[in-house]
Image (tube, rainbow, N blue to C red; front, top):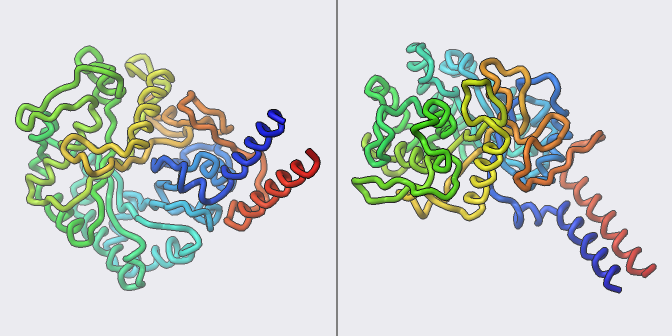
Length: 383
């Protein structure tokens, strides 16, 4: 009887894993960056099943890949789509912006839940001042196009910045933007305030450690127990670098007159491999960084300066991407190898099917649930 009860419990647990309610109950709230600069990745339909098995319901793309958007239809996954920097000049033209939205966004709504468009990525990390000048007009034109089509209530517009936009990052209360970006960021902040969209940053404590491994405590960047640092102006204690970086951005925004914006982390992660000069790029450190980060997300932690605002994070990245240029670390940020094997263990027990014959829609999920329920009933009858 004990064995029967144990098996019944396992069957019921499996049933819950495939039910829609389980995603809402068990989901950690973490987002994932789904990059595709590789030639060996699984099909989007298989990835849809993997993310469902992981209870991940927020995905950020770097484009608007129709294959992905179709594969994730009726999956209740919220998508951020990306407009690359190469599109910014075109997006300042209302006709071209409208054509892009009509072709790349509208056809997939509402079956695929597109909630945000990032116009450009780390634009101010480039030296292209024309690109800098095009950023805000492109954001405005895309947003106006969405508004004209009646889509602005469900799809917002923003852009993602690297931390290079900061001139001062420590202590967090002294955070300030670079002076040469002031005229550009002032308009962007006003835009965010007007349409109530988040300010996105790509924040990587790994870079700080890599550049100065003897000066930056490893435990501090890995969310491990450590003495931490205290901001002398606010007396707030920071036990990790990521939270300090986020609060520095909040301070920089407030210094420009805005207290009504939310800062979200559109990318953060840690590489599992690197070149000889890339200190700290190991599976052990990557596992600690992402594993400890997930625990804090699950606890709905806020930063010391914003304790009542749970930090909103998209981890970089879902897969290792073998065609990314640059140092070895760039190709080794993934939580998973392309075959669905975890790069390291952080408690994510996902499932990547060998084949998928249709997208994992709600109808298919219900079919699986019904089949499992029948198995449970049949087992009880025969017991």
